[in-house]
Length: 293
Image (cartoon, rainbow, N blue to C red):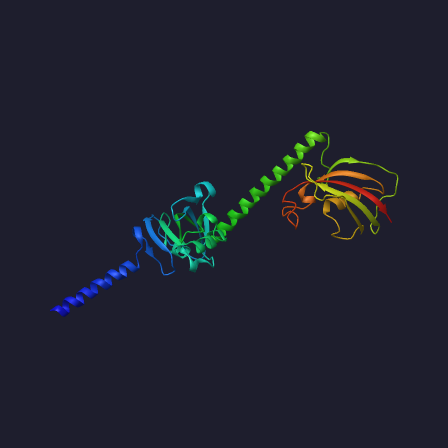
C-alpha cells in the first residue's frame, strides 16, 4: 500500500516538475531554442507562412523593465517585415512565426544579445546592457510572398530616390535664388555661375591639361582646405568626375569657371568613397585651366 502511494507521489512530482520546466512566470512557455513565448490572441487566418513568405508584423519592443524603446506605430508605420528564409531563424523566436496565422498575437522574451543581433544586427545598446531578456509583442498582420516584398521594396526605394532628388533640386534652387537668380541649368544639367573668356586654343583629346580646382558644399564649407592641382591627359577615362570632364571640354587655357554640379554629375546616389560627401549632394566648384600642352 505504502509502495503504491510512494509511486503515485513520485509520478505527481515528476509531472509537476515537467510543467515547471516548460513554464515561465506570467504564463510564458520556454521553447527548445531558448526563448519564451505566450499566445495573446488567436487570429482568423487559415494558413501558416513558409520559407517562401515574408510576414508583416505590428510589434512593440520593451526592456526587461517594460520600457518601450521601439514600436511599429512610431518607428515603422508600414509594419516590421521579416523574411522567413532568414538564416537567424533557428536561433530565435522568428522560427515560431511559422506556427502563426494572420491575426495571431504572441509575446516573446529572448536573450538580449540574440534579440539585438536578429532584429537590429547590432550589439546590445547601453539601455539594455544589464537585461538578461528583451521583450517583443507581435501581431501577424499579413503574410506576403517574397516576390511581393521585393516589388514593395523597389517601389519604396524609387519613391525615396525621387523625394531625395527633389530635395536636392530645392537646395540648388534656393542657392541660385539667393546668389545667381538668372542662372539656369545647361543641357547637361550643370549650372555655370561665372566664366572668364580668353582667345586661346580649346582643349582637344590627347592634350596634357593642368587644372586647379576646389569644391564646396552649397553652405560654403570646402571639401578640401586648399585648392587641388592636377595634371592628366584629356580623354583618359575616370580621371575626373563626370561633371568636371564635361565643363573642361568648353574651357581654354587661362579660363576660370564657377559651377554647380548636381549629384548625378558629381558623387551620385552613393556619395564619396571616404564618406565626406553624402549621397545626393550638389557640389560647387571653382575651376581654372592653368596649362594645356
